[in-house]
Image (cartoon, rainbow, N blue to C red):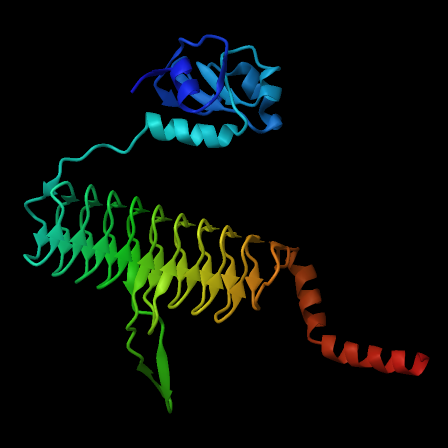
Length: 337
């Protein structure tokens, strides 16, 4: 698709400086953009790149536009505007509704005539696939599950029985929704499986990255709120509840029965213990470990910086003596008093 810079400005409430008739077909980075590309600028360490860009136009703020001689789309939030322009120019490819010849669709499933079922996909009995949904190659949707309108399961996505996916969701390849939670009862020296009887219930406009797993609840449901964004390779355990518009980066893990509030961010490789509560507007930095509830909004970190191995070994050896040192310090303080 091709738009003029004036078209984009009208659509995304921006202001044009320069040539409003420049034609834009694609988005691209500053250093590789050409005359029919649009890029964006937010970080002043790339000023030299901005000055030398060959982009047809650049999205930036009014303050930054004063130092740029080319055509510009001036907005308050260039990154957000760039995301919307990119979605417009690089929209997901259209698909022809219907089921591929190799798909297996149970006669008891309800599949909208505007939905698509890809090669080798399996749709079991009682499933509901709503208008405009896309079920990609090799996906499996278990009995009595629901896939909402215009949601897209890209490829090899598994949705367990009775699980519910809302509207306008996007699941990348390898996502698993509704696998059994990690529930076992001790029987002497062996473990006995506890049946996992809950569901996974996912709201609208949720995106889940490749190979992320969300386990079904043990008795109650695992719940993912509207607008949640999950990166690749995340583990969400049974009975977890994640509030609206929370974003979680890759390789994070959340143990069972934990509640994460609204508008939180969880950094990559963060670990969160089970049976705790994290309130709204909490931001956990990468590689942190959260072992207790967080009741106040803010930024939280809990990790040790990497050091030369020899120095770390010395420090680790001293850690074993902390209890003894603390006891001796208390005794010394008592004597001084």
